[in-house]
Length: 263
Image 1 (tube, rainbow, N blue to C red):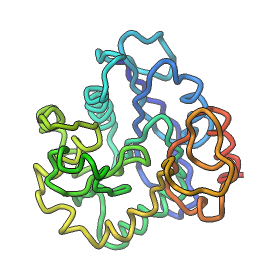
Image 2 (cartoon, rainbow, N blue to C red):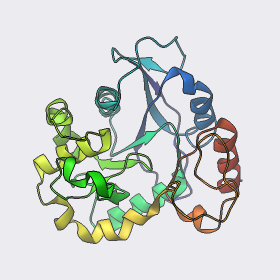
Image 3 (cartoon, rainbow, N blue to C red):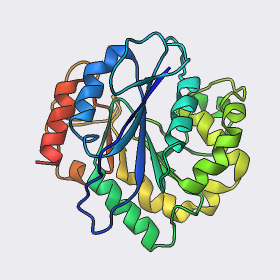
Image 4 (cartoon, rainbow, N blue to C red):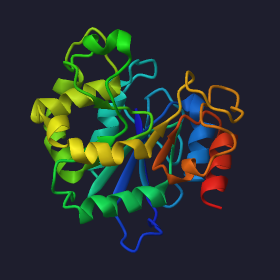
């Protein structure tokens, strides 16, 4: 897998600038989508991008030794998280290549977190918490505990990253009947803090709904874009309040979402 660190000065509408590193693992066939992200929401932030070893060179992508055909992409998540932590930061946001991140809203949320006493020196693991699909909840190895869905993105503090990384390879590969990269990362969290969700229910309740995943079964009145995207073509006022939107499958849609949210 190849890793790129794309660094530029972070700009934010918040009064306080946050030190955030973003991470995206992608594949060569999604280069156009990646470029759209780098020219929209990721244009002015520090971003680590990883791709598999068979990919062609790209000035903004670091190739690692991971194989392109891996699914679930557990090793590529490990590589991405490790490379992210090589950049010194307070906060780390793991995104998918089809995630749109509303960076100003994310910065505002981090200000809220810190003002509430939840700074980067606290163990913070946040995003859109879910129990998993009903038919496989008992197969995930989580014993009914919720996990942060990878699609809308995962926010972790510096302390959380430092606690997770030494265990990352072991816990990401813990066997379960049904394995996904995001559920395996949750197993790392619970290996460290078994009662994390229970002990942090108040901040989970307060912030989890700010990460938005649109799923095909949801009833959305707006016309949907083609090619697998689930985020509406025409965004609502509510959409502008989210920290992230998932999923955006075409470069044209990524740029359109950005133009509506950051005109």
